[in-house]
Image (cartoon, rainbow, N blue to C red; front, side, top):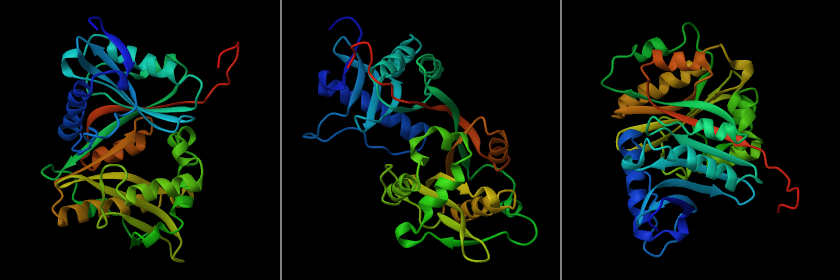
Length: 315
């Protein structure tokens, strides 16, 4: 195949796919400090998705996980030599077309200047711009003591409970009125939230659960009103996957208490950096993370589109 084409990953030569995935893994490791394992074993099936194939090589592509009825797309990603040629938009358009009859979510990381968001928006996706932030231990943010709420503590912090308790219901309720909660199937029900938290605890996101940093916040009666869940993504690196506080407890310093613990516990256990994603449209949260010393390293995006019934003879 001499001309560039977008094909199913299964149609491309396995060594070429593995070379592309090796670049993708390396960028996650070097730019997000996240040791992901994307390359299948010698006898494992290739990942699902589509790729840019030209001259016997794979120049990039996107991955597909989730179910056939409700896929989750990751990408597009291109190797450096294929960037800046418009292929990010073409891969995004292909991904939108391939999933046009199904409820679909997509997660992108902008490893180069070309943004996939406009192509997905043009294809009918809702879109949230996100930011990947990092706080280096060598930086000089305000001391963690200043992060803590002033006056009487609004809550007590407790270790993560064995079995997760009823934290799925807490996470669901905390996200009901947020852009993420209104767009992602992840937060659609307490059951989905519980499954997601269980996956984090079990290391299902390609990271180890950080027991020393993850905490729940409880009020005077012992009822859980907030949580922070974190995972170790690389040596001396912890990713804050979720910070959630019930609406009725916001503004009381519960989030500050949880984040203060993460900063202090991270420093005490030798963590070199903390990372997180935030939704750019939530300006107050973004400004707060900036004050804590979290710098934006990469732009990202989260998109969604409801499935459409087949019509006009199309199935």
